Image (cartoon, rainbow, N blue to C red; front, top):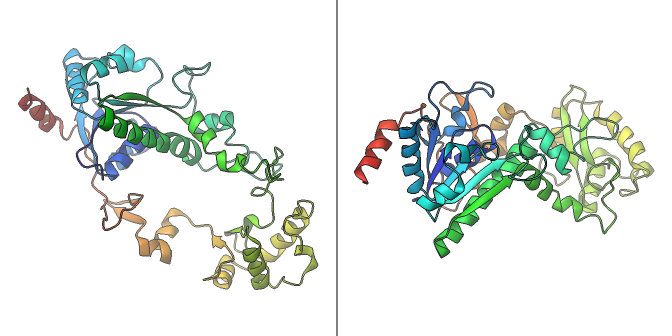
Length: 361
């Protein structure tokens, strides 16, 4: 879908490389500028996030390499960087310089706190951003510390995906007007924006500022339960018709304890009883009981198990490619199926890219 779009990525960590990978998954030509030397090992092997990209090794503190970087950016449609505010300016690659070279450039900036504000210059990580934005508040049961899936709510959900959306909007605008823009993608902004669906429940009284008292974070029908074998089941039969089916399959249709689905005063008692029932049998028993039904129950799977689950396997959502388990590109487009491409070695395309730039003089 993005064939013909050129993106330059300045090597970074986390959401920036993920956003660039997603654009590559969508068909863009992404060239990542890697620093000389080995990859940072703080987050393990970063090569998976480099799939489908080209790699050139440049030292941006070297004047000649900086000139090469500017040439690459001058021919690109978009740029992605994830440094603290001011770093790119000090390198000589700030928005003013790059837009002088390339007025159509969509300049994507990926940070946790944003380009301005009291915390803009300070360090932070995923949990810090979503804690500050409000997105961490509903992530756990009452009387337990908040705990969200690592990176998914902040780095990826509130960060990388909002950067991708901003880049795509900027690219559409540049195609129409010939004018580029700066995309300020801050994880605090994106993760707060992700709260909109929950916040929309306020007028109806279905969202409480007290954890465990809202429509989706407190009911006995909207949580995970532990089975006899220590495995876990997710239950979320929100609609009354699904709740009725859930109770029938559980043999609880006539149990007066479960008559009131939406009475928050009853939720602790109902939860305790369901906890005791689910603890009597292993997860496989419950999975077989609910299989093919609309009761909205599913076992919690590891990524390796998810790859073998019949529905996920049929869609080929997870694949083992080049020795690593990784998810296939998403979303999908009618009549198209993009295979997972290889990731380059650091600097693999340096000579090739330098030759292209020389030929364009």
